[in-house]
Length: 184
Image: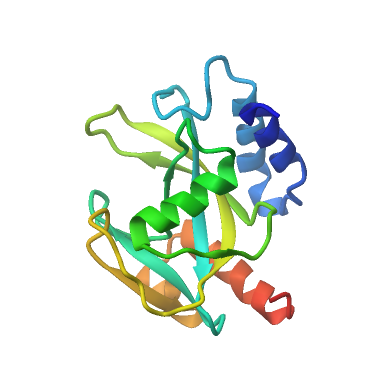
């Protein structure tokens, strides 16, 4: 199945919370946009990215990495490369590249969605239409990489002291509920 159709199917299966309906509608519209919405060179209105919320082995915290350009703590993630079979493969690859961790997929379904503006630099300002997945680590040891300058495990109750942006606090709350549902 071509990647665009796979993306449409992935989004169609997402049980959209009412707070994410506007984001979901914009993502659906982007899947029909001319050009390649999965290409990092599509700037108007933007392109899809993939990221991961990685739960600790005890499922009591989430791994965040320090993004050098944005100078913020964020979940691992990034662009979808042409070699990536699908969006979840891109998210898994990004975790490996940024942290050195090989992670287990806790669900093949979309975990969260978000649209955020990426500031200008080598590329013009543009939107990242971020598809997010839930993974699990089997170790607290994070090898790291030259793509990040730091990493940390953040407990569910700590996230607002790290960053109170709903782009992070919303998925942290979802992860807390997922853990509480004994889904692991």
